[in-house]
Image (cartoon, rainbow, N blue to C red; front, side, top):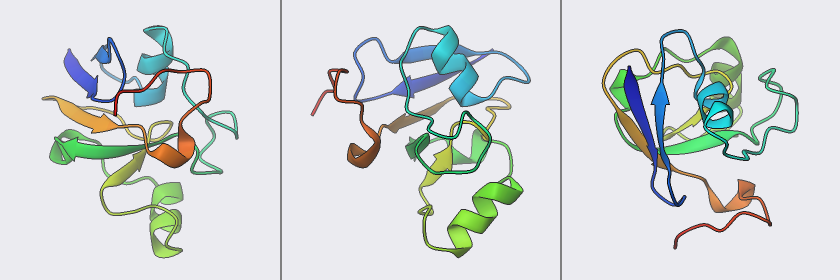
Length: 107
């Protein structure tokens, strides 16, 4: 088991089990997380700005590679519907552009 910490969410520590995407783990933990395309890697609304532990995430998916090449996914961001946490921990933040209006975020 590994840990995902969302620094700008209250109670933002989420346990991730093998073969689970970051998004699936966030949802299982009860967090409402933007994902406009239904977690199919067709948009960038579910992105996470990674602060530490990028090396612990799965390699970029084909969708993430396309978005990076198009300049729509920064080098410090991953799509939560695509990325998996293999081992170790990762911490990050919900980018301001994809924050949900009904969720309280830390500044």
